[in-house]
Image 1: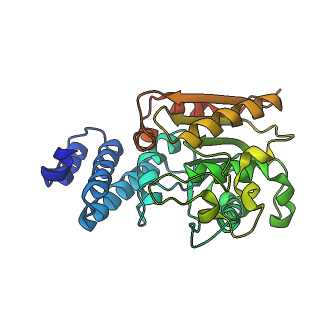
Image 2: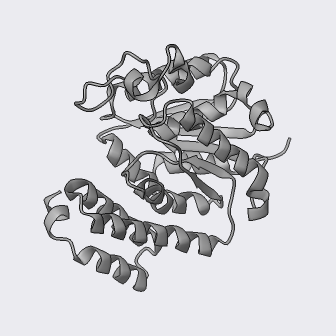
Length: 299
């Protein structure tokens, strides 16, 4: 991390040189963007935030222009680096792996707690799903092959829009609209009396809810009954305790329902390293997601 703090002005030039010399194209741009994102986290200089956004956006645009088409992947943007770089960080590092499938990568934001309590974030996620359903065909996508994914709370929201089928009618959504859910480093049970990560002493009830009993709104584990949509759940071995415990419980609960569920633990990583690894093209996650995106043979 010291190198990220001090020896740094060569990073943008490195990204440009690698691209000009054919050393990775969008991957080089994404790597430089992620490094600047880490530098922003370590020293909180807005110039790093700006440079990271530029390089990650460039990586996404490069990849999209090369592929030339988009696909119905509704990605509920996770909370990764904050201050507006959240969606950009994933668009730049994750998008290349997916649009090469080929797939359309749709990045959606949502209102954040504690300023906006549940169900406000869930309403935003459903609004994004509704937009994709109604508009993706105009962008070359197939509304019959929509997938939901997310990291951290984004993964929680992706799971909720997959499982809360009783809410579909209110959003004019067809049953079975989500063909698979990919949730990484997500929490699946946000109980009101559990302390949230950090040293603030706040519980999830303090952060997320403004009325008793609302915790079930943010807990996918409470809504697995009858589910048949495939799930891919993954997290880092060094993840937050509530993520590790609720992910294992979620995988077990889905398996009891008889649906297809894959569960991966990535050893030796913390959740932020796991987030950055999403863009690596040869990981188990990339292979699993890309395989699920491929059209199934007709029988």
